[in-house]
Amino acid sequence: MEHADIVILGAGAAGLFCAGSALGQGKSIIVIDHAKAPGEKIRISGGGRCNFTNMATAYDRFLSENPRFCASALARFSPGDFVTLIDRAGIAWHEKTLGQLFCDDSARQVVDMLLTRMRGAELWLQTTVDEVCPDPDGFRITTSRGILLARRVVVATGGRSIPKMGATGLGYDIARQFGLSLIEQRAGLVPLTFAEQELQLCRPLAGLSVEAEVSTGSGKNRRSFSDGFLFTHRGLSGPAILQISSYWKPGEQITVDLAPGIDAGARLRAARGEHGRQTVARAISAWLPSRLADSIIADCGLTEARLADQNNAVLDRVAARINSWTVRPVGSEGWRTAEVTLGGVDTRELDARAMQARKVPGLYFIGEVVDVTGWLGGYNFQWAWASAHAAGLAL
Ligand code: FDA
Picture (tube, rainbow, N blue to C red):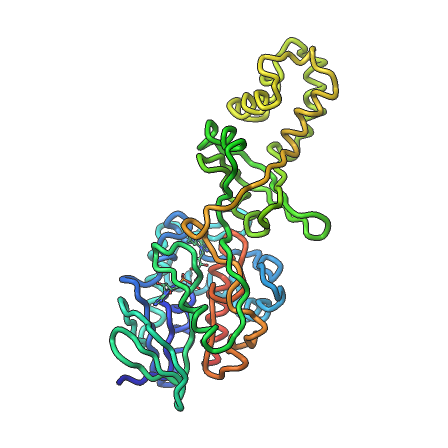
């Protein structure tokens, strides 16, 4: 039987970072993962370049039943703190857009930096965790390598997204087993899917992307995101759709402005005055890709129709189809492609400073397994680093 002061379950972003933060004072640390390699999601993130943080990080860019819970950890480990580590490791980076920082070369550099930082801790890969039980001296962990006794256990097993990459519900099972409540989990940052009627519009446009503003909800619950918008064979995707997917509730519709900043009605009336013989589709293609313009016009039953023959009501109908297209998704692509998991361990069960379970001293939850989910754009890694650091310093 082996003993360790600290056992961290999960060698992903949060687990690796926590091990590095907890090192020191002769503490023995073992990080366990069933995967062949550590940090697999980091490796594939950001198209292989890892969007490792976002300079605009603030608590209101995270979804949680308890929205201010994440503020304390985020304030104590900032994007600038992570950039300092990246700079120290000599990793070249750039800001892409909206505060999103990416490696110039490869996400692997971030994994290597995390592994170097946690040198001194043991890493047990390809090790399954069967059970975590309370023990008079802490916790008893049954693994495929045998039984391990630990004074403290950190659960950093991530969410449910992309099971093919090793995601499991272990963290939620452990929380439940120790009597902690959970917020229902659902897929976030995920493409939305549609019924046949909308698919007939999306399929021929698959691969086409535009800048769009996508909104959902109403009143103070209304959310809008302006970003890339992509038609696919299964429905809609692109950053604006991924962002809105985290806020969208089944049954709700979304509104899409396919030409943000352009008053399509005013433009069409002006075009009618100046080039009445032009087709409506041609006029629209001055500011939208012509494939999309043709599709919108066909949807409005105006193929080949000339501007001069359309009254204001018809042009307003076309304009509404461009500036406020409402569609009702039937669902999302689910765990198979979701970048993150919404919901998880109820933050009311955790102490915001140390991420320790209030009812179970010595048991900590960090990263995506917790009910804190960021927007697209580096926020989720920043939460992984910040929550891991908070726990690491307290261990
Ligand atoms: P993470 O999933 O990283 O790690 C959990 C670890 O636990 C894994 O190594 C897993 O193998 C292990 N594990 C799970 N169950 C286990 C079990 N039963 N036994 C043993 N081990 C187990 N975010 C961002 O900020 N910028 C970005 O660019 C991207 N890009 C991106 C792309 C794609 C394709 C995805 C899927 C996700 C992103 N993300 C992202 C989100 C980001 O990857 C995610 O939020 C963090 O990896 C979460 O870190 P965790 O350490 O909590 O979980």
